[in-house]
Image (tube, rainbow, N blue to C red; front, side, top):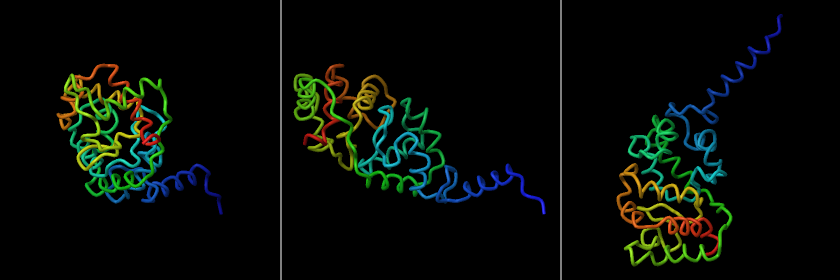
Length: 214
């Protein structure tokens, strides 16, 4: 009896792995569980527990579940036009079902957040805390905690911002300031419009370490 060629065996094993729904990376298969997608696909950018290593990608751990559902749905319908949306998430979310989206949101909401390290000049952090707590009254900038919670933990209508990468917060605030790429964020566009570059950097630095200080 002839032995099976090694490459045929490897191919068979690979196909078997792809057909296993608990390990599948097939984003077009409605049967693939959300947990599998989170661990096999989304983890490439956001980390297996939703704690991303790169500040280019947001932490999703401990994020507000309803907010994640809304954002994934917006990506799927191309409702978000910011670069991160069409470069990464449009294609990834294109075939997600409502159930998969709800499952992904629940998965990340239940993961504990490992906040990035506190970085920055103490004076800058203090300035960021002042914006978070009191806003910038002279320019009509609303305190962040008004919408995002007293500890930045988020609400059903607004995302958790405590413990988010400072670089990612800066990037998103600039999107709100300069473009209409996030049409659902009309309130944030008004708030961010009057923030200076220093305001943005200060509050982002403060928010990154917020869970460790409050």
